[in-house]
Image (cartoon, rainbow, N blue to C red; front, side, top):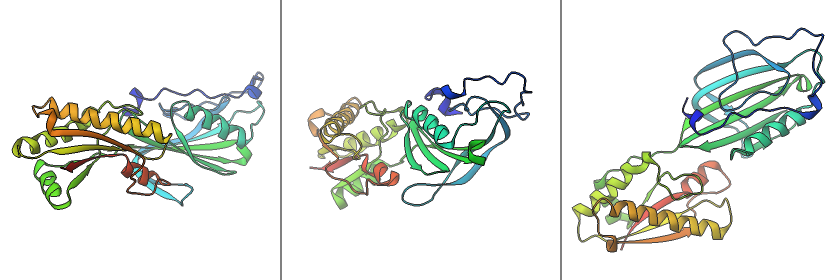
Length: 274
């Protein structure tokens, strides 16, 4: 499971649940079930059921339900006999704080359900938390997906530059940094290929971000990412003076930043014909 490399296991517990359950028989996890490598359970809970397969799941989000496909893991938990029963609010807050500590975000929260998203190391995971019996039972559903990837050829790039004057590329970088991820080096090679095939062509490499963060930090980050692309293409044998690097930050969105899909579309690098 690829997320193991990038996401630490989170251990959850409540200070109010420090009382042991001595004198009560401890229920054991259902055979074959265990915590997901991404996130652990609440203290004093055991697993009653689990399943894992490639499937779709409908998540609650602010804009309406969202169905995602990927490697789906469902785990049902139940509180051991004896320890004090936490409220669902306590469960939600503990999971929320733990997921936030590894860069995750809360997408939805009500009296019974919460939805979280974690993106790291080129992977994306959505987590649904739902409680039953006032917190005695709860369920986690985790769907893991590949991050947005893009395949584009030099010919397609050249045609777009002649037709539209630009092409939007989705190059994956380390979160909050300008390091180009290995899976995006194919796009870099195609940029170099089109410039090699058309030595008269000069381009502007322009970075764009979503609206997460401050306008100034986004502008700086987009400039750094554009410069990283220029440097990477130059390393393929293209003269650096045929390219300029520009950072627009969040100033020129092409989609609604209020949705995850919109933010993903806005995080782009455009090659613009000069």
